[in-house]
Length: 435
Image 1 (cartoon, rainbow, N blue to C red):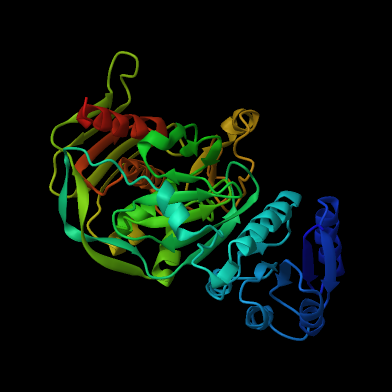
Image 2 (cartoon, rainbow, N blue to C red):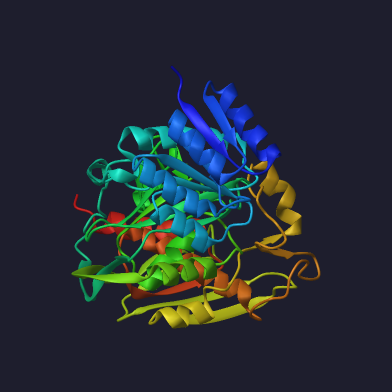
């Protein structure tokens, strides 16, 4: 017998759309337009999965979620909403929901959520020691590869960190153009930063050895699975000193407003926890350099010994951007949130056609990046006079975290991008790896 699903939503259009998708995939469907009717059907029919709207005419969807879990602690519930907030999503996940999706729902989102929820239920659901993805913690831990400890990786002055509570972030993928979501979950000491792809549930380490692409963004990949646009999130994690974290994600990290500010807010909401284990740091022992040769005389990226982590960047574009310069030292979270995190990604009108031909930029919207025309900024007011160069520093802080550890060194950059950031991390890694 095929698996069954109960859809509880007060919008006939949503019920019909979700039901049509699941019937096409061979599932049996039940529908209800209120929390009370939904609970009656659940108790009598015991469906395998429930798709549950946050807003219902007779009660809060979270109340229904609580009642469902009281009736069956292993129930797999997919929360859906067109008016939810990050805090609502976080609360739903903490209450035992398998997934939280934002309307409008795509065919792929519905089918992936259904498949994942069934696996979640088979593994014991919210009543087991499962992760938010439904996989047993031991299974996930077995796949985790902590970052390699190079000879220049030394014990630091601070403790390792993770987050106190799981949190959910959802939005649009800048390059995929699809709605995407991710769950951040604590990990024990010495785990590193790890991505868990959905629905395939493949663990990809946030390490330079996982980097697959650097065109317009940094993409990690493993065995056919990938996670795109990781640099803004990694920048915030580097700034907060978070060394151990599991990131469950659908294909691409949400772009949000094009900066790292919303990631900072999510981390503040979830809380950061010291793990009382000394963290390791990558201590730069000599000068490493990329560019500055005959092929690329105008581009140069260096990193040199320094007792701290500092970045200077010189940017030069035609007007309306012009020449911009910025120096930043990462010595506090507050400094990062004030000076670097708000700086947004940017793109040029002249490049839109080429970016689209590459299959990128499909999620570019007027509110999630700075669009630069021939003579002026087209879609927004700048947050800083030199917002462009500040975003370049944001990217460097994120990309360089793919060495696996917080950095102690000084970076100097001139006209460089993701490819150069990754190239210098690779150079450091190759120069210090055992032969």
